[in-house]
Length: 145
Image (cartoon, rainbow, N blue to C red; front, side, top):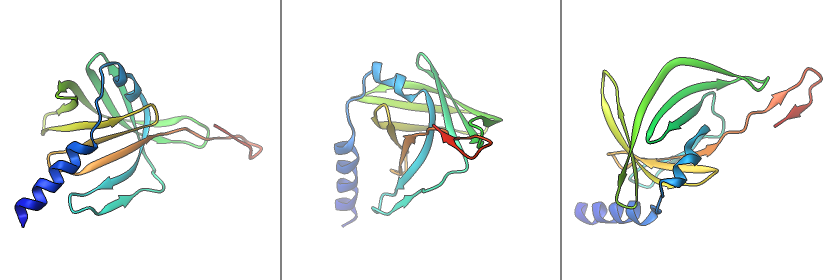
């Protein structure tokens, strides 16, 4: 029974991945908020509101990922903490390889478009992000995007 579950999980993960080209990687640049986490047992955790968003910046195949907190005036509070990563072509897609003083890990980029991306980790947990658009609240109460 366990073997069947593992096979179905692997087929689902590989069946849901898309071909991601090197040209598509430019879509990773910018601000992203997590929308959902899908666990291997099929459970899904949705995020309606996020106090922080991820900022990703690429330079070739090298990247930087930071947590930032949006402010109501359209600016961001940026922490000093960041994670560097390297993108590596693997099969039809790319892996994001992170390494710091404490640990190293890999996330497989399984889907990528201008408005969303999904990564999965070694525990087969999939994280889906959507592009974040800041809202600027003016002094008179009006908002702009």
